[in-house]
Image (tube, rainbow, N blue to C red; front, side):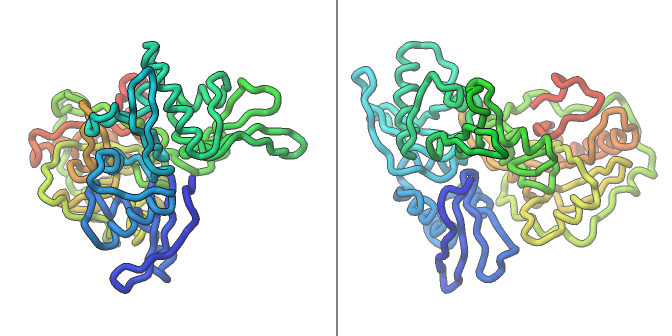
Length: 403
């Protein structure tokens, strides 16, 4: 969802247009309107002292009634964990005699116990708590979160109960009724989702993203690789489980035929969307699924400004395309929170592999994947496999797919 109107700023004599959204701030150089870029990709999880990235960061906060303070733990955490724009300045509240500082962001509300400034926590982690003290804190923070946008929190309302359960970010306004073809709909917009029901069926709450997916509309997600920069899809949780399993063999013992090697093709035109790893060591091989068709996705990744790329693409016929060298970082995944709360930019530490309509019964494709995993493992012996939520091969039980 947009969090502010589009505006312009000038940095080092160059004019840019930008607009903050819940998941990221988008920008383009004037007048190159078609080349839209993401602030998060520009920053890479860091806080620059000056330049375009710093100007966009400060403007994003300013346009949402806050001041960016790089020394503050809230703002450092928000950058690392990809919390999106703030909604107003930080404030304090008292619950059961204890003072808490908090600040509402598009994707979550951050808080800490005063004066433990460095111990930053997320409100969403209290969603399922049953401890009375934690429930009191959660409800107080939820009331403050809703109040930040002028909305009212009602713990008994289905909208608000499910919004807490679904973790769809801050509300942007109170519910409202909209008549569509003679049917009254109750609607509430959140930073990451819009929920609705037909009046007066208050408990039958539905999600706009589900409706869009049923109508094959690629808004806010889906598993079509070219429709999004992976890592910002609602299909992906804020905390991705990282496997501790050793480097897997994707199947049993298998010696690839010589003909398979010849199918590793360098795709042309050259994919322009890659960057330096800045010394980061490759730790993960990330598998993604793509609904295809392969040619459309490959063409999209070769388009300047698409901001989506991967190292390898395996078609449904088992052809392997190489799109970028492994020494480079491609843009196939976003920021990921590991166990313990540490946030990294997954792109810097991973090799991305996309499969067109992955199917475990598709022998040519699975043979190609086996060979590619072995080949990559020969160069990165300690690499681990991570299955992205979009990687759901046909023929594989859901619980076997993993995170």
